[in-house]
Image (cartoon, rainbow, N blue to C red; front, side, top):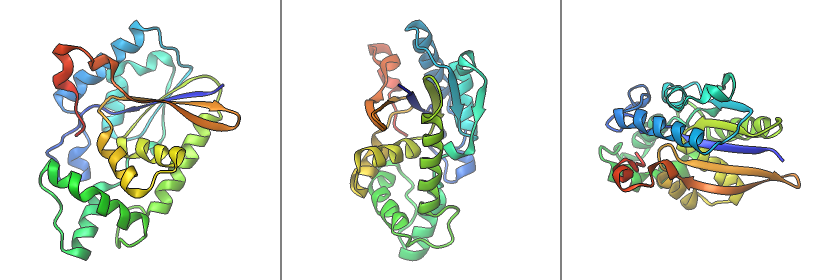
Length: 219
């Protein structure tokens, strides 16, 4: 049976207010990736294929994990995150609600932005929701159809969208998944009777010690 382990990237630049500035790991993000890589090696995890998105934070996480020990790193832009900042900016232009400047504000607004995006109500955005959903479905289907277990480094929004499909989530639940996913968390899917079954969600065993709990981050 085919298995996919999806990994969210390490903590990025959470003070950013645009896509480019956000797209790099913080010092803690680099450390999270190194700890995860050590955990996978120490526990004898086996993968025959390894993928990541083309974003800087994806590649820095994969490199920090030492992911290439499992094979040549296949970079696929279909694994990239949705363009949140452009969505929030479009939402501001149309509703007058400003782009949040705090993590709490972001968390409160996210559901409204995603609902407007999914309903095709946002204008002048980098990627319509239908296009994003189609590329996510396509890349996951391609990886799932390959041979042997796959390690996939990507973003929380993409992982939550795969969860949205797997679990038939509505928009509020989808937004909750976006907010819940930890940096460098592990999410496993297993193929069974033609379906992808979720067998592990948001696991961070490499951070589950008293001296590392400070490193458990969402944003």
